Image (cartoon, rainbow, N blue to C red; front, side, top):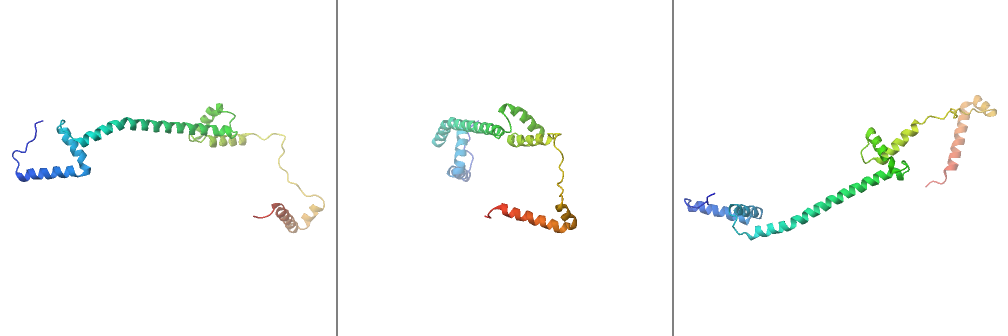
Length: 183
């Protein structure tokens, strides 16, 4: 590209360009950008501020890259440690016998819609689900109410409301006696 000249410009135009250039150089926000534009136009131009900033950035860049890599490595390690801790929780709580049962639990978690970090909750839910699913053994008889006998039955038959009050009062008195001191 041909070098621009000031030929053909009026002194006012030249003065306007000079004022604009001075304003760009004096403004801290535009100084670096303006100097880089000047360097782009003439690569041989010596600009100590830009040269020093570029040299510092060149030295700092590998260190920044290393810090970024270390930060990412630490974040990954922390995530792995957290996942391992979450995976061990069901074993430590006695809900799984060992970590070897983990793939089965993960499959269950996926089927039931648990998030990948809800190992303990999924193990508890599965345990409750299994307990609910166990059939009642045949040797257990259904609950049969205890019916009063003898004089007790007569008291209930003669005045059921009075007998109900007596039983309720007896229960309340026993409850108060067994409760202990209030805090």
